Length: 464
Ligand SMILES: *Cc1c(COP(=O)(O)O)cnc(C)c1O
Image (cartoon, rainbow, N blue to C red; front, side, top):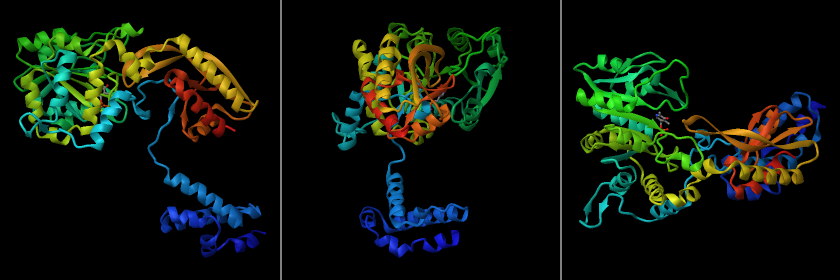
């Protein structure tokens, strides 16, 4: 039987002439189509050898149908929209902050037209790309000087290289963190050419520890926001203002890596207080840096604020050219910062803030609506329930804050939660949820009202 089937595997020439293949050949290069057909034939040959005796394996129409599906997948963009039903607002793997529509419109204008990126329209001569965000950054934060680069890891590298290259930087052991994606503070420091001088212990560092470490090759005192973790219990760290006082006494600049960097009093939005960028500036920090796409809610960028003299040194360092911010990022960042000039409408316009500030009662209504839509589109072998749960901010911001949320918890008579999760990820658009308490859960905190229907459509198709 196997021999018989193997003999019947259609030839390439025949397949290339088969109805339907002509259209594929018009849209895609011949080599791509031939390659795809070859691998389909090889897979089917192996299935026959392994004992499958389904005659459709050698049916040209079935092979061509598979080809059409495969070409569609091959030609779909790799980076594409997904629905984030994890409830994690700043999910680094799912693209962190969503841009405000205002920011996007502005980027589109700059992308599709020439711009005054590095051109001074008053003087008619070359200008600096940074001017477009420096003034607004100063206005919004109160910083004396400002500068932007590609991302906060770049900012950190540049600050250390320009202010402490070949010199020592004093950092508390409790702040030598690793954040996701193989970013380890000691490694970035080494790459910058600065020499790490660790002080204190994992759980406790005192001002005297910093003081004792200062010597003639010390260039910088540094503080790092612990981002994604907290040491609890018997702990002590030195407040920024004490470190600043020490820096002033010993004539030593103080740099703070704030990680997420927040400009707002989050209590206004029903969240716990998180120290702000303005707090650090008021405490007298010489330089600080933070991300553009975490709590700020803008595009990926690294924002550096501080004394003008130090900012100038940072700006002039040769590494700056390699970390240069791109024009689209710059326009998106400027537009995002402009939204901060009107705080009353910020929560409406900035998706990050809107997600964080959505009250639980509203989330419950949204989850019930999703459950209703799913009940209509899924067979009765699925069980659905709206449950209370917790969602997280993500992106290293407010790691201990849990926000009450509502999820639709889904189970199936035969499929495991892992299998439901896998199918959902394969849908159009893909849906990413989370598994908790033996159920596949969809957290609606990160699903906008207008996305609920699309989410149920996607699951309706992928879970059938
Ligand atoms: C996120 C983070 C960074 C890296 O910022 P990117 O913008 O992702 O490069 C650096 N330091 C801390 C403390 C962070 O939380």
